[in-house]
Image (cartoon, rainbow over the protein chains, first blue to last red):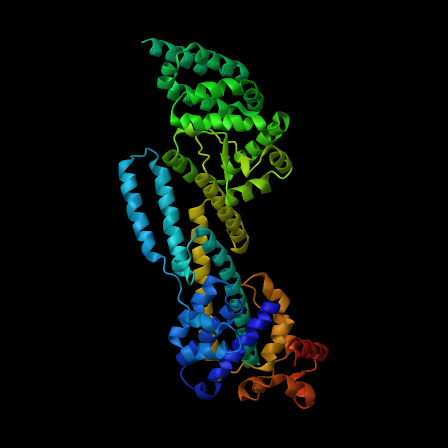
Length: 174
Length: 333
């Protein structure tokens, strides 16, 4: 519950940055502002401790650098905006190629095992695509850990936004 | 020819003696060694040691006793043979230092742990062990570095003292199952897989509807779907919010709601705010739309008494007051 409150606070703060300029603009503009500030708020709750939060902040910074800078100005996360995330992508291709060569040499009778492993690999790659910064997570253990934290944060975000929407709607209905 | 004859008898001996006690088997085995020329021994050593390893792997509890008895012989014989066998002799030697009785306990426990892990770990393990190790290398004893050691220690807490006494350096006795490799790489890999499956269990609790699914691929699928659905929900909600309010400042009443419903919200993402709370919170229609509120909410509401009557619709005044107080204090103004 404290996480909900913190998120709400940060989110509101982010929205305030837009406030003067964005009233009565198009719906899509407002939606973008809402979403971006919500994302940065969610990510900043982690204070740079998780890979996904850093990646998310970087991603949002490419869309709206000013917003991110403003939102994070109070916190020491500022340097994280410019930090380069390690690129591990190229290594995977090399590993995959060498594994293919190995496979050809040894004809395994247990093809189902290999197929199962391939499926799992495919799924983990899918997960990496979904979780922000997933491509940069070097190990599967880290990936699962980050996914856990990311899911929890997403749930917080969704909950708070839902309640705000419901409140606003209920207010209007009256 | 003689070699073959000898080899076959030994092979027969080994293959048929599932009921023989391990001790007898070992003794017979070593007697054979004793009778032969070292040269012969070196040629057939791979066969013999392969067999022996198999037995050692399945021998279970009796092994330490056997090690105690036959160490001398094994050292003498095995040192005469090829390179990869000498490591085994080295291992036997190390075994000698251990306390036999307590090691059985260690073996027991470790075996149980191994068995347990067998259930948890995937088929990856089998294949990897085949690739990295040959069956001749079912060594009982090996050096383990940090990662693996941590895992082993956590698994066999009681016996850690025993192993400490019996070891001068960081050795952990690992019972390898038949066909399993025992080098540090595979142990470390096994530890890694353990970690992964542990975390997958957490994920199972977190993602709704995942308890029925077994298997990594299915779980991962569910997780991916769930994360995607959450992300889509965020998009949808932000769009909805944008359409609902012409201005971006969300009002105090929303904050009040926040406070009031913070508990129910924690459970599931799909919980909608209970309607009765909505009613009691009493959102005055005009306040939402008039843009009356801007963002210095707390001071305004608390200090001036004027806004309050607007908020109260008479039904839940007490609730409002407590909410105001709570939020006020929590925001630390």
